Image (cartoon, rainbow, N blue to C red; front, side, top):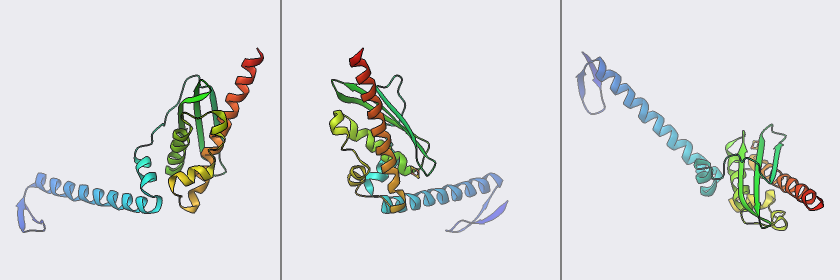
Length: 169
Ligand code: FES
């Protein structure tokens, strides 16, 4: 038997009790740490980006997209963008990245902003437009928005080139 100070009173507990006591302590520590990280992330990135970071919508890949691009930024991260068109408008848009949390958030918003847009309207989805939608990002993460927008524009170019080819044949 071991005497353990449990915060309320001293208790005699067995080895299994000690393990449980330590596990609970560790769980509390991990939870506190996670809450602290969430709080700091919310503060630095804003609620919209924070929620999207927790739930990165439009993440995935697509077989046989109408427009596709894969761009690696100077930071070394790669973003992919997949577009499917119907009646000259984006019916489905997905992104994939091996990058940071901000690249997920920006890729996800680039895909969301592309939905329902015509090629002319897609041109307006710039890095600035993504940053504006997010209400800004910390300065060091701004380039993630530009990389996402660039990848989207490359995917649009891919679609336009294929379309031109289809019209000729
Ligand atoms: Fe490279 Fe975010 S740090 S895309």
